[in-house]
Length: 63
Image (cartoon, rainbow, N blue to C red):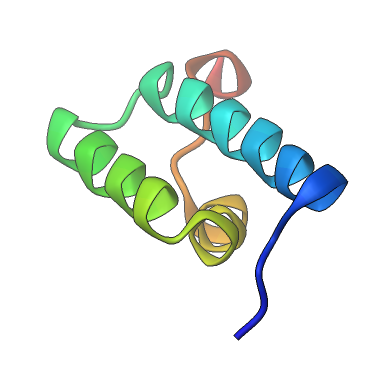
């Protein structure tokens, strides 16, 4: 297993924070927001990639 440190770790952290902000601002139900947030928090890299492909879209992009 590999460890994310240094610049790579900071990039993943920034992307995960962006994903969490987008999840909270989405029009999805509260339950879906909680599940997506937990996925991104528990599995930072994999969770972000799954959210990027299949996650809820922000309210701004649905308008």
